[in-house]
Length: 317
Image 1 (cartoon, rainbow, N blue to C red):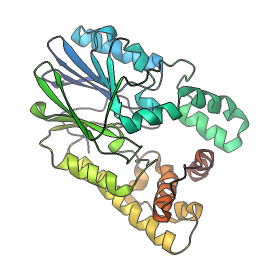
Image 2 (tube, helix red, strand yellow; image 1 turned 120 degrees about the vertical axis):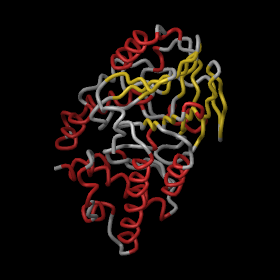
Image 3 (cartoon, rainbow, N blue to C red; image 1 turned 90 degrees about the vertical axis):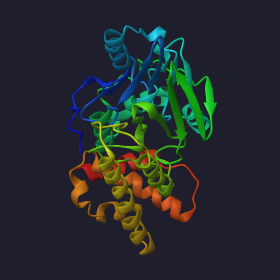
Image 4 (cartoon, rainbow, N blue to C red; image 1 turned 45 degrees about the vertical axis):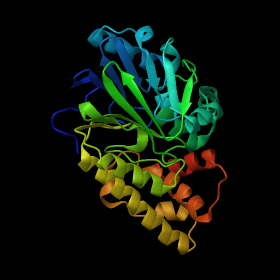
């Protein structure tokens, strides 16, 4: 699914004409991508990483490549609220930080302190704790640099980075409450945040699934060559179609089991993933089924996060 022009290797990748992608294999839990757009003395960073050390390493590599230090970055766009895309915001001390209104609200509700508390308790949580340590143990939630958005928007926002036109397009709620695409039309590039997981299982914390499918259609309608996902290798429109097909598949499979009266747990165990079983983090089917079931019931209550991580740990075993 990887576009042959680029390799999925750790570090900074030059997309041409002042655009860059930062990639973190294997693209699993917490190993997110980011981006940088530069024109003249102006710059825009797309997302930070899960802790301060990782973000600092990325910003150092970007400075080596472009001459721009972290304090020189003028604008930072957070594509959504998850910590693996925001926990280094504070290292860009002078940047205007832009996010959707929905993402900004979500960032206030879930901060790194909650993750740190959860991970401190993990050794006492049995199989669920072991699973948490397996997926998040490489990150230091005591060493983060959080900084809230300084500007928010809803719907769409157009920016300029030098002579480059940047389109921010809100497509959430989907993966989270306020997902945003960062489109650079003249360079035929889009940074998608976690609307795209390539070669990894998408996880739908918010839904509705129809919004996520429509977000894929929005990308497919763009004249783009390089598509930088939130996780996984740089892709093309074939990668977008594959993610969209997964979403349609699990929606159909979950609906069938919901109508038959199966529980979330039984449905998550019962759904055959077929070709998608080879994707990393396949156990995320648990969260996807739970979110879909709540959508079918028109249940707006928040998910049981602890229970879902327990079910994912069970499926992983």
